[in-house]
Image (cartoon, rainbow, N blue to C red; front, side, top):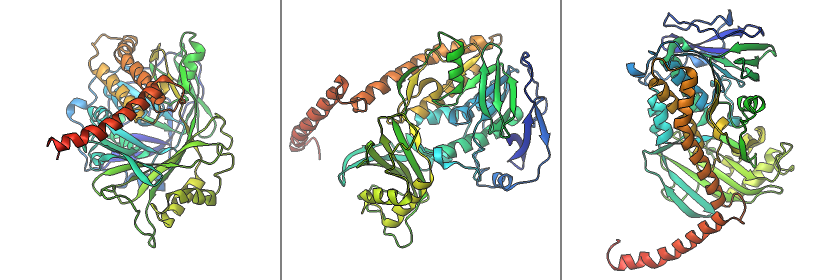
Length: 504
């Protein structure tokens, strides 16, 4: 299925497509668009189809929010045609980079191995909350995407619970950060991309990347029916995550291009979404001021971990509609994906027993609903961190986790990925008329890589300080000493300041 850029009364439209079968190598064809509406490319054949429930859902107000204002004229496609950009991955970075490339003069083809994230095919297994700071939010808005619907329910701060008590509180400026469900962000970006960029972006769903030929500038995919297709590119953008097939191809075909791993899949998570107290439940027992109907609060609960897991953490946030979303995560010693819990958490009853640790904070009905969702969903493997020696090689560019995966502990991953896209758009807007694609990528790499390197270095140091790399490192003990001394200074100095009248 494809979600193309054609609109009827402001709605996106589904069409069926099947690109041509595998063809011999040839140079990329630069395709010109003369009509404002989307035209299917020469590599795409259309077939008639009936209106499905998925299409009806996409045409509904739940998918299309026409109250949002569209981009100003300065954001529209005005650059001369640069050629064909193929993007692998339609997550937040892939969707935003599609907008930037389309506005920068490329005809864009986006390939994603998963189904269209509409309300019918929505996959909650990988949909977790993202902490978007002003950096990530600003990157999206620079592309002309209105984010007011997310800003309306800002992130107030977080609390850490240990042994039934709140031990730490972190306040956030009410306008600086929001918690956004990943699939909701992707859906919003896809919708805005179709409205902002017309027919310059084509979306290919359930097409998995099989092979990349860096020298010949071709990429091969397997479609939903198992057939193989091949397409040429003037620019290939890998936004396909930490296990990137694009990066893997570069490492195999370019000897000097080797990513450096700093940690691999040492964490597992499961998520739950939109859970509300049942009619016979009492309200969640939370400290005064913890819940706010005008803002989101993220709560972390240190929990006992079943062997062979360790460092268990439950995280829960309140949503604008009065429901709760969150998940549970553990550290583990093995990278194996075979039953990572050792059989300790398999059935709904296992999760219900495990979640009794949250009694009486969350009532029994809520815990049953959370346990039911968790029992039905697979584990999400995370914790891999890496950095590549440079962001591009030839006509291939890596963005987001494909290039610089960082830990989830500090909420920097999505913001850095969206900043990648924004800086790429800025590089396109500032490009001289005669600048080639190769020159553009080299310039972008020079302008962006220093920040990417610094982010990775700070993330690794912070992981050590937090003890995630073990407790036999100097940064960990420096940080612990700082906390100890700071705590005693606070106990001594704070009463003194009150006595002197400096504090009320």
